[in-house]
Image (cartoon, rainbow, N blue to C red; front, side):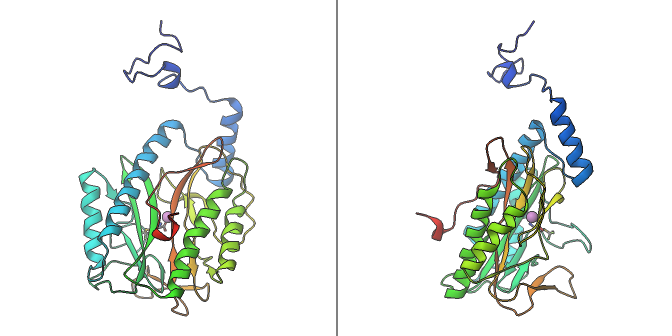
Length: 298
Ligand code: MF3
Ligand code: CO
């Protein structure tokens, strides 16, 4: 008979206990899992689900890095959309955004330029020097979801745009530092608000981060503004943090014609960065490790 310390039958070279040994989930853990599902609609993932979600997330961040390198003055966001579609196809994946929601989202990525907060639709307009924009890439790979986004600055951008972009990035990074077992969801919003205050920017409250992995949008909702959510993080939770930061007023309005594009009410610039995170036993792991922006390199 195979023992726990023998090599696994699957040929991985790992010990059975570290590989395909049947996971006995303690009664206590099972109780917690059930409570989170019933009370909050949060699905705590098991190790097999985590492995698959990690792959989807990795693909998203790799494709995001590639597509960001293509974005130059003169490139159209339609071209970026086609590039991502093709890269996903090469890996047997599809865009999670494509035909999502109602009305069905009409593209494979979101490209949110300047005063667009989120859900911008790629089109034929060429990018121009001085534009800032968010590129949001989400995929379905082998039935599992990943989601991430970052900003691109086209050529030289003005000081205010730089400020909102840096604010969005550093607010995400500070928010991530709060995430660990037993931390509360509101600590994320608290961290983002405090960075926004330093940068004299405002935090969008109408759109939130979200659980992700088995579906595109799952519980919990992860508000980026000050809030009172006392849901506690537990290992196996997977969710996004994706702060949208505005230079001026915090309010956004949805385009009345396409029902997707969200613009700042004052038409001042907005910026956003997004990671998918896994809560681990000791803290959290960034599942979408895209390359850091230039201003964050030390
Ligand atoms: N990261 C974005 C979100 O979670 C991706 C939106 S894709 C869209 O909302 F299809 F919903 F636009
Ligand atoms: Co998202």
